[in-house]
Image (cartoon, rainbow, N blue to C red):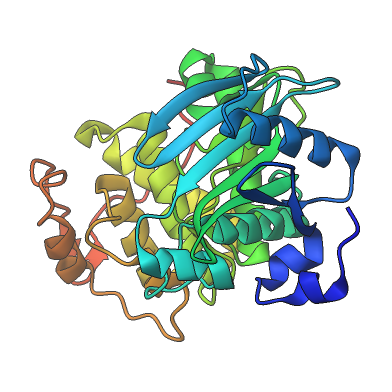
Length: 342
């Protein structure tokens, strides 16, 4: 475990050097590990390394394999671990992982990016998770696979499950928890670009516990337009929680505007945010609109009808009724906002 300063510094992302010891190698294994400074990290890495090398260890269970990612649960005392293996199929993402760079050229969703985003979110808001270690399988000196290990959230379920099972009072509590989380993101200048009901976790044991955000590979931690970021995330979450029922749209829009005002204050409610609230409530935006560019722009000029035309080009949005516009502003009635009891 004795690592020289030269080994620490040599060509690896600053986030790995600041937070971890490494790289550490276990005998006979092709994997290398960057470990947080505690015994739990070492034990988690050791068990996962043995599993990756073919050891028959029933303490590691594969939960899911999908789209180049594998999810594992590692049983341990006093608490289990969560592990996610990430394949890096393209050379550009492999270099992105090597250098810790997040951009269009080198990709945003490699393991080094997820470690950086996860730790940054947790440091700024306290509503993320710690990272215990990052494993890497190198090919030609460049990461080919990376594996992230975190504490297992025992007694937590995702927001979608919690909301579906909740009564009217419990839904109000969950919506307040969501608002508190988005307020923390707003002040921390963070936009979770893969925010959804499956990536926000709710404690079933402590109703006072704040929501936690997970799966942070697609995220920007340098938001320059926090009001825009907040509007996009509010609209997305209310659409996921309530669906896209046209009969409820005016109520949801009023609810979203009230939430925007409480989080971003009066200065954070304007024609641009109103437009983005309406669009994100009505449509799936990820395939036809660069939210990353919007929230990191130096200046934002939103043309609602033009943006709507672009997002309606997606087959996922084609069957949704179009928004009625008053010039560039959604022509929706102003309503007193209440949290829905449904």
